[in-house]
Image (cartoon, rainbow, N blue to C red; front, top):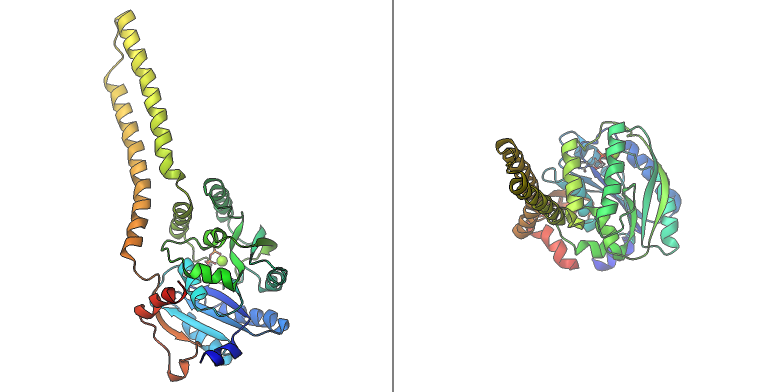
Length: 339
Ligand code: UDP
Ligand code: MG
């Protein structure tokens, strides 16, 4: 089987996560095919169905029936964009792996540029957005703020305005496969691993159809995952704030004693006390919450559940006997194989 796999092993693997993307997939496939066929080397397109509730899976199966280079990994429920990408990386066989959104916001026509850089010897080629089209001011503004914040408070130099759209060499992918952390921020991890990295500029297009699958709630979780994965600054903040407040209260105490001794007047009691206590209570609750964010993630790690559960796959070699159902066991062994 290894022999056979060698002969048919694709040179390029395209990974596209999709959550309720029935409207965009046919056009997405068409554009990928157009671009990739021109390169004249074997490629595969791995579509990850992230627990879609519409006809996404049926559309994927149609594409697979039409073109066996289209392969499907279908999750048992929605596990989120970052885990869908992770699954794609676990299944990809190409020498170079390209992650791209299925909604055509990342134009497939940029892929040859990424590949060119890879051929020049770069191991990670990320696509940098020089412009975003067709997105709300709010999204644009929060994204900008997010990338700048991440850049400032993390130890790895995560490039600004860069999404998951990127090419990675096989050795980078193999390294990433050994990193099984749960609440993951893939674009941070792909920088953390090192190797030769470079960027290519592109214009982010509006969505082809449908609407964003990242509501505010998911965006917040995503931002928190990114920060907690790569920075201890929020935890250390408690120390700084503690010092500042302790210092201020020391001065206030000295002033109060001084006034009492020299003028015989005491500072007004009730309101000041109440304000001080509530203020400190608020600060403490905030930092408890921050500790909670980290603690919850530590708990996730300790539980060591599989990152995702695959219900069925198509196109990975055994589909002749019908869809293969990967059990949880098998899914976790993916990490064993590459560790
Ligand atoms: N996506 C996913 N699972 C999710 C949310 C999104 O697989 O829970 C996919 C989605 O189908 C798309 C990509 O991730 O291909 C990026 O999502 P989206 O375009 O909604 O995000 P935006 O571009 O608005 O940030
Ligand atoms: Mg999008």
